[in-house]
Image (cartoon, rainbow, N blue to C red; front, side, top):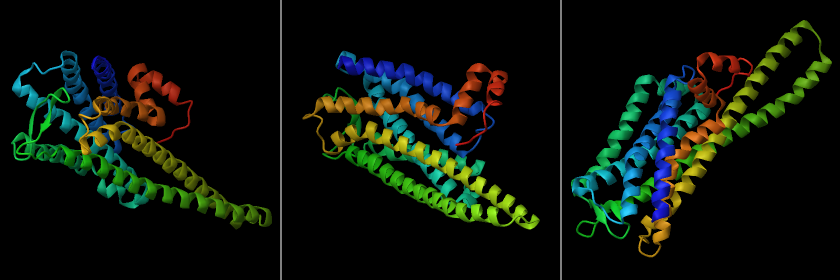
Amino acid sequence: MDFAALSFTAFSIFGIFGNVVSILALSRSKRLRNATTAFIINLCAADLLLCMFSMPMSALSFFERRWNYGESLCILFPLLRYSNGAVSLESIIAIAVNRYVLVVYPNLYQKIYTATKVFLMIAAIWVLTLITLLFPLLQLWGMFGYDPRVGTCTILPLNGKSPKTFYYILGFVLPSVIFVFCYSKIYCVVHRASEALRKNSLPMKEMNTVSFSKTTCCFNKRYRHAEESGEKRERKDLRILKVLIVLFLSFVFTFLPVSLVKIFKKEDDFPILNIFGYLGIYLSSIINPVIYIVMSREYRRAYSELFAGEQASNSSISSRRPNTT
């Protein structure tokens, strides 16, 4: 219990700092004003709320081995924890679908992801999440309350029925299916593009050694330009795929333990695994910004601008080749 409480406290401190910095850096960057960034900021906002309220309250309840903060907070605590966790998951799904459309259907991307539609998508994420949690809030299907088995306030059965198992199945299975679908499609597109470039490289080399006419030279220039554009697009799509794979692996690592415990109702049999399950959920709220910093040059530039200032960042960027994720 003490280890869990100390971990929640540390996660809260690092999570608040990381998500606040991420929101400031990404919102201030003019180069990153796109749909993907909007979903990432929404993800960081949900994680920030989790770090500011749910983690400290979890730490206190684990330290004290009981709930000493009244019935109202015992309802608000799981409501915010479940809603913020759901919004975080749905934001990751939205990012995956966004990257899928960009790679697989690039001609439709600008039509689908306009500023208004992105705003409506983000609003829908929050509204649908809150509607789903109205069932235990209004005691229509389960109820919010204190569970002595896990030492915290959560969703309890009402008349022998509870939506908790359904929430965890939906929260793990649905993202997994969407992630696998999007990633496999992106991989197929990237693989086909790579094969096409390799097949076209041989005729290009042969053409350069045979014909030196003006017309052929012009054609070769256009061909080389198209080939370079294709290679650049392939590299960009490959980077997108890598980021999505890392996000998926982190999702599985952080959500699988608690999902197994809750789905199979093993809180009493494996209390340690239940605690580590909560640690995994909270850990997911602080590692998402790290993933984007490590794997995206553009996001690293945004953080650089925030800390070093616009002038210092521009001088360092000018020495690098521009690239996007």
